[in-house]
Length: 200
Picture 1 (spheres, helix red, strand yellow):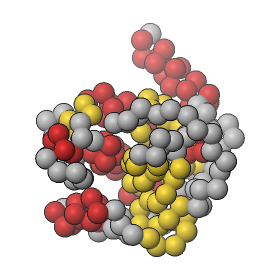
Picture 2 (cartoon, rainbow, N blue to C red; picture 1 turned 90 degrees about the horizontal axis):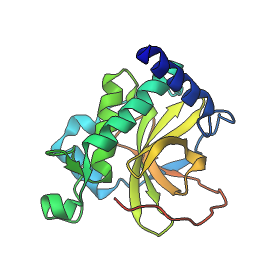
Picture 3 (cartoon, rainbow, N blue to C red; picture 1 turned 60 degrees about the vertical axis):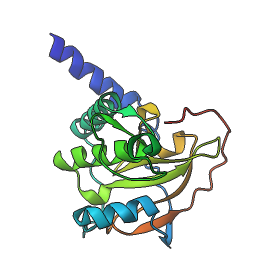
């Protein structure tokens, strides 16, 4: 009975989630751009993180099962990691890493979600680290899942998985869908409404 109820909730969430109904909303990417310093340093320490390539540029098929897995992993990582700044953790302004001892900043959440979704079978080219600007002007990192129904954002500041256009962020750049060590600009020409977003 409990499992059936849970399955029904997942199915309802899949059909009612903001962005699923309108769907097919993809970010327009531009040309190659600068790699964030933190990601560059991560690549030096963990070269395999930046060697992932994909020959298939097709977004992953968003099935009910995959949607449930995306929501599950987003919730799991958001609850198992406590937010701390790199200054608090490492004593430096910026350092990208996986969560350590259950703490991390926004990039750490992103890397862990990406790792877990890749283990679940989602291709690296459909899980893109993305740099955004919050309405208050602060920089932030989220994970973009490229799917057949559009681009969705996994975020440690938002419990829901939202279509990218339903967020209040200004999207700046993200990993290339062809190579995880390459970054491309994002052409975000949406009309933005200024709102408040919690800081990590």
